Length: 225
Image (cartoon, rainbow, N blue to C red; front, side, top):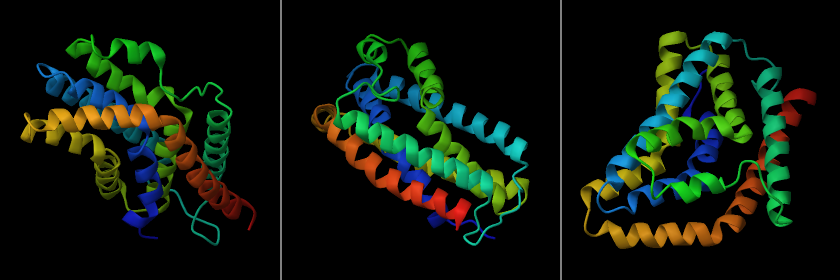
């Protein structure tokens, strides 16, 4: 079984459009003096954690598990997808009812973003992928999918690196815009930050519903059909 970008695309999109990481990045980049460095360090922190997750859990799964089932997904991947679908639908319901979501915007972090030091920006990046159950399931599902393809460890790890780069493409794009267009990017970053903050609830509801139903179906199909 060869793994393709289309196999990983749901996980790439699921990670890429998480609103909280985009909001935090935009808040860092809004700082005209040290925002670019803090945004870069935040990105490096996130990348470091996800690479470590890939190394550790890739070794546990041996990046070479066997795929079974009619749709090429084994029980581990299917179970992860089922759990992810349930978590996303719960998130959509909580956001709709305006209940607190444990994976939602962390208030303590949000209030500390603008005054964060460079070191704290890096630490924020290190911690963010670890505090969200949904992000854990996204990353583990991607690792499981690559492992089931039985590509061998070197190619599997290179594939995982490509996955991480694509999953963080929006964050990279924001940093590049700030780097290449320092004068003109200020208004764009401020507008994007305000828009995401104002529409965060409806964005999370829509994304969680779409991906929740999709992953629930994929997990159920892999386990029971």
